[in-house]
Image (cartoon, rainbow over all chains, first blue to last red; front, side, top):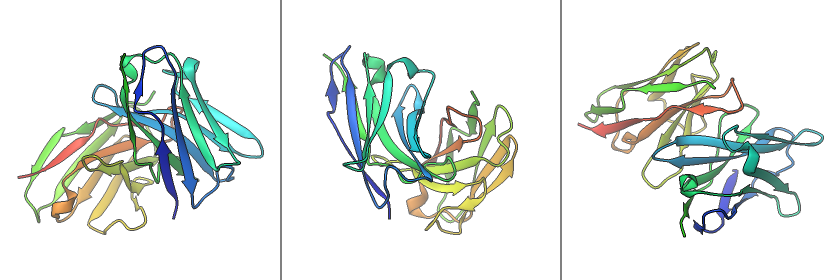
Length: 121
Length: 108
């Protein structure tokens, strides 16, 4: 059974970098069939996919156009986890952030428990 | 970007009755559609993928149908634990994959 455990701060100051980590159990980040995603949810934007990383003989990265200039999703094979970095945050980036796996198909299952990140000084 | 529109925004149904939720895509997504259930304070949970295939462990009272741009999630006999928010998501036209805004299923 695959489980995802998120960690990271719940409060970030404007203009700084939001950093979250998702630890994987029951699968490996370098799986040839899975992709590792970050999704956020806010009342104003609903569920919004942010980006993903996956391994198919080499590492690939895809990002949503809305955040492409300031996002990075990076794998860590030594710790079997992946991370989200979102730079230059504003209060509009306040949301619950989820990590999620997409396996074979591009639906999301399972999800991490979610982290409420508030952008405020 | 493919826009997903769900209706109604809120649906009030009595326990034991049938609930029918709709999802419309702004362009064809074939059958590349998933449904999720979200309860307060929890992450979304996958119910259906491929428009009609139940995920592991999902009860048979949940069923999905449709293709192209029109989709339906039906819950045949509502149980107390089914009252939640439901989201559809397309995964053919991306990046980005896109979600509907949700239907809140409430107890009547």
